[in-house]
Length: 303
Image (cartoon, rainbow, N blue to C red; front, side, top):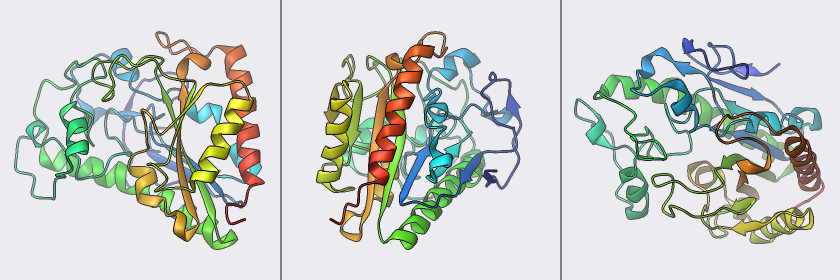
């Protein structure tokens, strides 16, 4: 059974049959191999303290919907698995705690705030640690958020998630002398106005990112790209997504800690409007993802 890592049980709004138990904000299945997967954005538990101004169907369009199902084979392969059950639109675990728009708050934020100009572009789009706008630019809140409210989200969601990812990566590295961490995401077929720095971009089937070779061996990343292309998919490398906090924080190829972000185009497996799984596409994609993970299990990046 997954280890429940939430320090504080949180109530939830109804969010469909894929919702996790309300008390589980983060869960992890320990692995026995060098490979670790994590899904930070597929959560469907919407805490009552969210108090967003938008209807749940609108909020749910921010999810990396069904990603946790696509990789549901992972634990049986001995692959470490970490999953967020809180939604990214409530708190984005793939952002640093310094990536905060202080204009959202009703009080003074005394912790450090990023000055990185590229990161600040994303924050201004409303896509920091706490989202301000949907992908379409619609304000999420009709109120200011309390400082204590944000600190609670960090303590109950961000910290447990990162602790779980770090624990799995450290354990995999200790067992094998190296680890391969895949940060699992999905993306819309076309980028919306406030989704990325490339609005209107038609996405490839996959985007593989290693922050320009700084979070994983480029040879390993290119092997992954080549594998997906051999399976008939279109693949972009480090564009438009290079990878964000979860690969930046845990990737260290010089120490044989390889972290790669993998984005999957949602058109391959679901209806983006209804969020319904398209069974044939889902089955094919899941089989290819399993083969991809099995390829990684057979790959030693030290050789």
